[in-house]
Image (cartoon, rainbow, N blue to C red; front, top):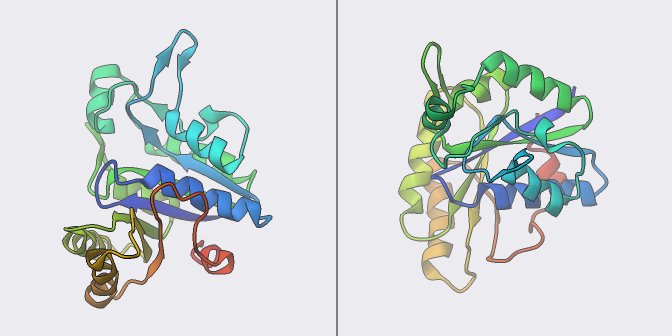
Length: 226
């Protein structure tokens, strides 16, 4: 069975897919067998041939994965809503046992699996019987979490709350990656230091806008996977 790592964010549109692609790319360029998975994705374009799982298409292109995109994201919705609401409108609600089986199947192809979440950590995936939250998927797959956050103003509060929530659910927090980082920005630099001080969680890397490579030692990155 492969090792895995779950990527969550402090909010939606924080850059999870972008950073996830850099992570998988880093591993693959170093010679690791690395794949990608996401349980449910919303806001996907509909074509005459069906919906295209946009996040999987992006990560696959940037990281050079290839293969069947439908294996990477079993639940794909057109409406750009939380998965619980999108599935209420479109049907096909998430089943946890299917997520588990799809993840197990794709994990057989790779030594390292990077799993991207939907939205922030408190994201309802299904609001019917049974209720499924994002944390239920993390626990089902027995993964530790890496948090992607914006480097700018307000991130100290958002990262601290996310870390506190994860710890309260007994989910291992592996570290934080700050996106949209500016080396000359006093706020960004202070945010990095304060996040580590207040949460006790290391900032593993910072990502600048239009970055094409993750500025992180690949052995340290590989060590985040369980």
